[in-house]
Length: 528
Image 1 (cartoon, rainbow, N blue to C red):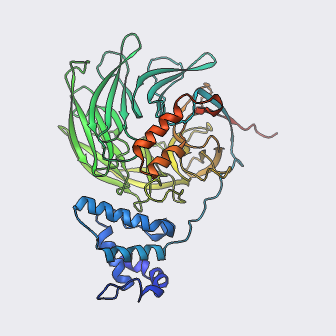
Image 2: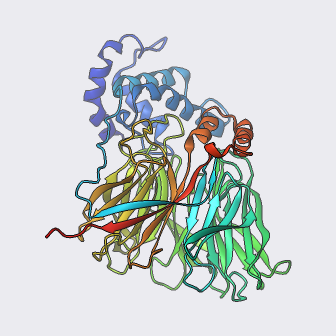
Image 3: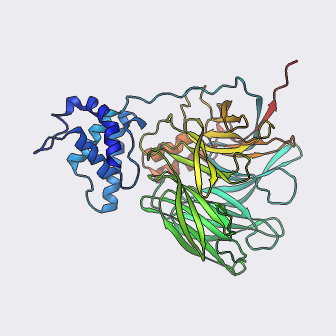
């Protein structure tokens, strides 16, 4: 594995480091060649992730990245893991071989789009919009449009419903940082309950602040809150699924965590699950940091529920967990990102090509770890299911800071188009889009189209036919990253939380901004 890396980089590295051959690449006793530094890169950097090319980041970002990787390795080892002189040489290699700046992506335009979108603001406004998730699953068996909203700034789960011509919000429960919801009748009483993944803390950290909360629906339509799991790492997803095949619903849990904290786990449902009577017992599936989600699906059609997880951090992988019965799983990577800066952000299991098997739609657009500029390799892609746990990578399009994507037939031509939102972009440029769509030509070739450039920042969206025209509309949640990014960047977690609270307390009406928007596409009329 080392030879291809060295042979691929050596011509570039020799050119970049010719002036350094007798200067920076020296130790006290022995001169270093470029090839020997490349071998050090493989030795020290390939143990837990793919070795990145210098081209994935501008040269100004590499010193911090290399030092950060060394600090992480030292923290895990309990001692210095990379000698100082080797660290210096690796840093010099990456700085010398990387570009001064990365290429810019072209603009999205509306030219040639068969759809024209109108935008409507929904619900209440906020000084700091931080909508984290929108779930279009109905809570009641009726046709009233409704969405379960995770409001990170308001620290609550909200039901947004249209009644007549007006939209109304009903607070369902106070949750610290509600990141995701799943709807299921956990206790079998005929009423749909809500499982909430509570992140607990915004920036990645090893703090044990995560929770899994059950909002149990009562006959009155109100919800009673029960904490099923707490004092764990930051929880990013919790899904109802019968893992042990005993006829009741267990809960799969993705714990992203941070540092060396994180895992995939499941809560075994023992008994009837009634409040105060049922019991959920946690079991670890795999200790791993960076799990973004956990999506249930029977991948091998054996009648046992499997799941797929998108795992970020240094892993950057889509991983299938195959249910072997009795709560045990075998796991295999379906896809690995090309480098550890890939920046995985979201994933959905969905049939993209209409062949009646589950494919995987996913996005990459995170750049907040070390060098926060939007990257030209951010975007949307999917894995085509070829059978027998074989998936082939398919590109959809590049889009700065892609945070979320969903698929549906937006233009009514019988195939799956894709909508994507950006949370990290060059927002000072009014031509950069926060929401775009990719038109499918029926053969899974996609053409990008602009939707909106403002409001800036979308990390959550749902597709649902709100106006009953047989085509999905878009409900999108606004997420302003600026405040959050500042306290992540400055490592001021507690102070950042205080700043957020101050900014959201009693804001002036002029400072209020939309949190939720509805976008409805109108088909272009044929020319006569």
